Length: 491
Image (tube, rainbow, N blue to C red; front, side, top):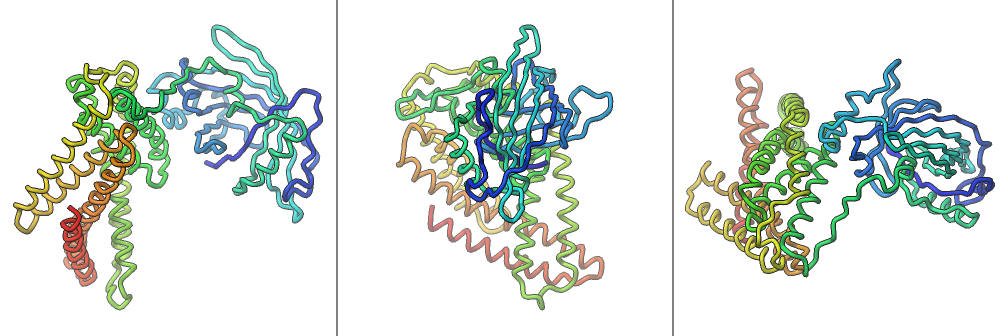
């Protein structure tokens, strides 16, 4: 896996490659090396990968021949996952097919294009002899495969930063010099995107605003969260930091919107999808909760004076959370490889393609969605009243956690409706977010105490000293009381 940072430019056939020696930190340009590349690109028949800006190919020739999966990270950055070629295999490896499940919805990946490229590759080197970037002069012959074949040929320049380099200013300098010498910035993000052109369906939705209907605002939000769910699917599968959290958040926000905006979307039609989103969130919970608790307790242990850390506490924490993390990751992957998950993705697509809108969906967003926001705020108040009636102990902690959940839902509703309301709602949502954050920290302290008690008992039964576990347990008890007071001041 690596990060690719590049820019592409069009250059007329027969035109000399622009001179770049002396541009920015570039001292010299090496003599071009000729390479012949042959690539077959894969996608679904409906071009679902191309629609998401993803490329998947099998390429021979060059130092990095093999299978390449390129995932967009930013306008000029793509994450590339590389697998070597297997003798006799021309179908997509199962490892890569799984990584794009969230885009293909389980549909078959087939060859959609063939590109043959003659590449003249030069290194852009600084005064100290370090390679800063690679300039590729590509002469491309391409064919769209399928029922209506299409042939094309063009020439392009590709400036890519060397591995480990992150100097965007260098690409700016190169672009300026290339444009001054006749090159033009390419409008396509990849060769296959240029070849396919308008064959790839567009999925642009209008940006909602104050004058939009309730249905337009809600559907735009659901489309955004659906896209984020699919983006973070790959991160969960590859173990990327925070990916589980972000995927779980997208799942929760989708479910919150289906519940909060039931006057806009038919509740009977969306309930099965809401149930599946709840299932997915539950399957991701262990992995996410483990991440949070591991960091919290390791940070709290590190904050203790060394004389108060008695016994192999750090090693015990590490071992405990290693097991929990492995279990959580396995459970999350099991969910993403479950046919039930593919069914969820298909249901999301169906919701967005043929939404079960009610008559109220055509009403002005500000007027209609205000009801949902008000309803969410009332739920928070009712949960708070229940909390106030509770005494001390577990029941009070559970009631406070319920306030947190209602605050999350209210915040999600406010953020979904934000385009229709502007700054006033943004300030309210920000305040609810702060309450949610305080109560989130409170809940973490509650769960941390349960883990510390378990580890302390284990230490005692094995003959070890449990003093440090009790010390950190006391710290979390005091922290929970402080956070509860902070919440009461803000509510």
